[in-house]
Length: 99
Image (cartoon, rainbow, N blue to C red; front, side, top):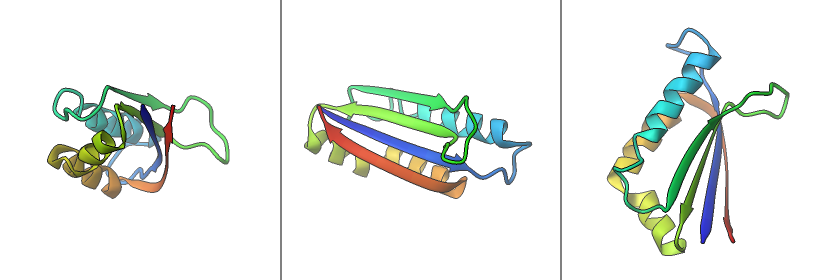
């Protein structure tokens, strides 16, 4: 199994604050559930503890293998969501690991 973890810091532009921006990002990421068939599970979380190293939103998806992760990456729905997310975030970090 491959676990894909991505964390972002949101931009507040166009939103009333960081919480609204993070909630919008979470909602957009969750649209992939049921629309993208290339993962076993999808979880999105919002940060609850502020700090210098903290990100605002985390996405965790689990995939059967690397081939499924690659299919997820190139899926048109994922690409559209990723584009929107990229426009509304200022920082992104990712880790993929096998378990």
